[in-house]
Length: 389
Ligand code: PMP
Image 1 (cartoon, rainbow, N blue to C red):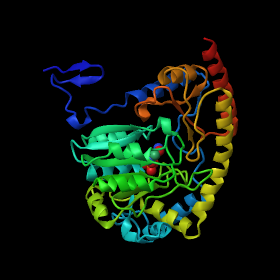
Image 2 (image 1 turned 180 degrees about the vertical axis):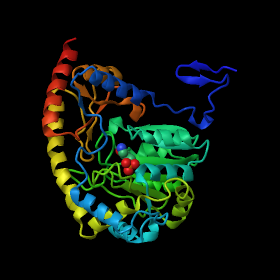
Image 3 (image 1 turned 60 degrees about the horizontal axis):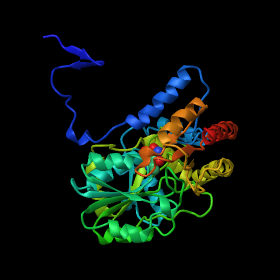
């Protein structure tokens, strides 16, 4: 009974036992860009990578020191599912809420999956403004919902409240929003109306506020404490600690009970020493100082990259938060990104961020000023070449 090897996989003569819930998911577009960059690098070409979704700073040494100390003190076990009490109350205090409204998770991603599995009804509609963080589309499809995309391009990437109220109805189970936004860097004003419309339709609003302390102008609003709202947040970005996996949700106790049913078998808890270390930083507001230092640097880079993009003649909304800019490009985003790699710069094509983004690319300015200067130089020459082609 010989198995036949077929493209690296053993072919047992029947179909791959992948569950139907994965049938609409794919990693192909992002993987394709990874492959293009990896190939260029393997050929020894110098490519500046501006496609990274995390700060280029290392975790602050103070936080590392506190985590090591916590490990020596025995914070190496499970914590309660909801998280260390002192950590939860410090987070709750910042929202003016109580600890029972906070659940600590293994990164914001775990929180997003918990909330999706808890509140997305199979077959229901899930509203996602586009462009948006690509994982939302995955969560909705994984839960076998119908994805309803909502264009924000003509409104400077903010949700038009009137149009939004036309899109949301009783067959919507959940809405995802994210401000400051990945990939546009836009900070939306007056988010409350969105929460009210969602609640009026008995749906849940996930407000992903993970970039809430990376802003350059106005302080972003939070929807924490509003009816039917699950706020997702975390420390990956503001403390440059993506590899530590600490996030949290803010919600009322009923919603929390539902999410706990998933969290108890999914993330279980975030690592104990990481929770303890962040809590100690928060106690004397050191976390805020660390973020502010980073933001100071990001602001300079934002100003530089935005002015260079404009000089290239590309249209872009000036980002007010996060560390991304989403310019419109003159050719299809895949073609633009692939050719730009050959010119020595990697960016992310707009399409994975939703429909309507065929002519946009995401540039992450989480890279040193020196790298950004060189990358913008290369990109300017490349764009000029496109215009004269
Ligand atoms: N939400 C958004 C909008 C993000 O950009 C990211 C990370 N790229 C996440 C959530 C996930 O963050 P975490 O590392 O905490 O899982």
